[in-house]
Image (cartoon, helix red, strand yellow):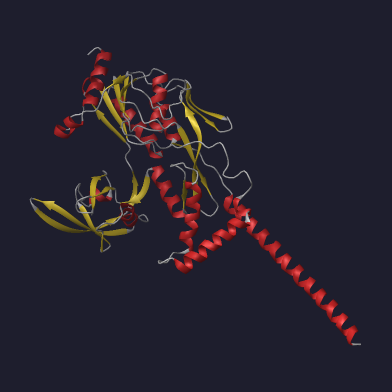
Length: 427
């Protein structure tokens, strides 16, 4: 009897154990399905139009052995690191900071200085910067290396900053009552910018006639378009147009400047691309289409050999001689424009050899509002020239005389460009 009870207990225990094991296996399977679903959602991308930029092209994926997070050893190692940090690290750190660190680490592993991970907040700010539009007061800021306070380096016309009487070389010592001593410039800008029609209170320190005056200002934020194009009418029918960068707003700003130059009787054009770091591919192609003959402006090629051509219809081809000023800081989109002008022989390139950023980067937004930036292709000039790490050599080399500029603001490169145009015009 006792033996029968023992057997009955044994089989009952075995059956119960099997049921528990089956339950645990089902739970693990469900968790893996949910985790895989979440990963697929966060990894979904919707690529926008690429922007001209720079970096190295990668021909291989991160791992040829499958997704990294499917490796249980990596999961265990991350858990071990978290436990060590929580137990031994002298300072505190949030899970959010560790999560962002993982994403940043993946990007840095590409060995591409231009690859980046953007948090949702950083992505929104980056979009505003590339559009050239933001909501703020309309003042350029620099961090003063002597006082460690933010200093106004320029005021944009017809903005709240100008209307409130803010001036170049004013120091912003407080924002909303908080002292800005040794603040990072990004933090100052973040505090000053904000929703349209809201107010920001700033304290200004201004030096006048040997004394320092402190001013309190309530400035209402408005939509501000960053001026990226400058036009000036020179003598003898020569127009001067400078492009500082290629943002979305640059397209209309350049069109207005070119129309004004033509209205002033433009006979020759100096196009200044010196120290222009680049920007939007769309912007530079649209601007090139206002000057070049019918044909290709630029084309790109990715790691699979797929090409994409960006063309213009030639309906707005410029009909006056042109000199394009460049230097070693003219990069990316500015090199696309200079390279196309050179290939079509629509102008003389003058100055010094450009930087040599002959590649394109693309922003891939993720479904959680964050984004990553990756280098995706090389670009080539209309004649098929790859200028990456080579740059564009000028037709006429003229080195900038920095000593003369510091002495009396004279610009020897611009002077030589005007002389070259006068020669072409027979003046």
